[in-house]
Image 1 (spheres, rainbow, N blue to C red):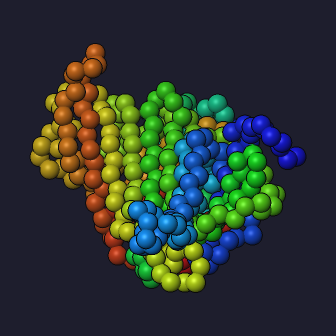
Image 2: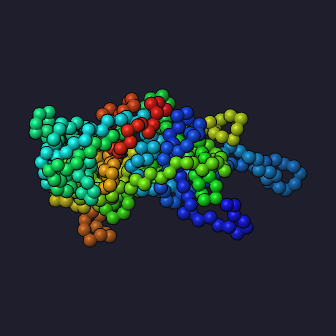
Image 3: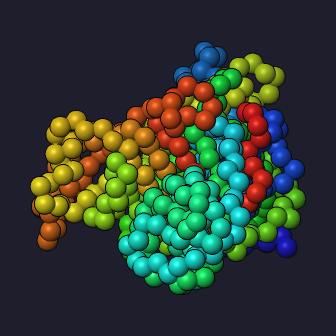
Length: 401
């Protein structure tokens, strides 16, 4: 219903939908997912060119002429792992590489907290993601190895959190892997966006992500912040028929950090930022739109705050130039959907002992993921390999950009 004079529109009606574009700059028919968000901000970046000719009067500017335009958007949101692969496609750009979920299984023996192996009734598959148990003691694990003869023993990347009973359900998840695109124009996928401000719907085509920052700690939701730019929005478009899925966001305390393949339990807070320094490309196209939105080279930085440990291992790693693998993993307690951010080789680039504003000693460390061929799925090298494990069996992104 249209509002009259003095009408206000509550921000609670805001909605965002996204889809990966099959053709860059062409709006998709509908969002793939609706995204629960907070703090959305839409900015039309209309330029004006001043007419500052001399016309016989002491006036500097006679007119403002419409120039080119692109639109900016951004928001903060908890991480929902049914839809987050779309964000990864928009910042990294490799096609969604699927790893088929292993078949359903059960435990052939009880397992205790801290165990790093499971005994299965049938053979499992190395390199796959599984959930074990049921809510509220459901947990998600990467299987790193499986024996080929009975008893079928699966080795896990991280220890069990809970006691799991003999006969407990073991469910396989489909893994969606993405890394840096180093083929074609080296560009990530473009996205179509739908935005409802509770007064009208807008759509934007050709959107290119500029930055995605993910951060978390033990006491608050894991959140990401995203910025993007794209073609000028079209107003008064039809509302998408896609509904929210009802999937829960991840439990923040499920975060595990592996350093050199070994779990570290002294992390207080963490953050990782993927930046493409996206810029608009001007060209005389006959319209106000820019030719495209160019994503520059990928820059990834991470920040980890550790509690100081005996021997000060993290500060020493920084001082001695040690390079090693890192893994950041977390999962949803209800579905077991998981996110893993892996770098096969990372360096600590800054480090210090923090004692000024805390009761215990902390070690803030800046981390630089370094590129390797091992983490690259789409040519060249990549500083990160991102995996979302969930129940979605189809690819989020097409086979090529």
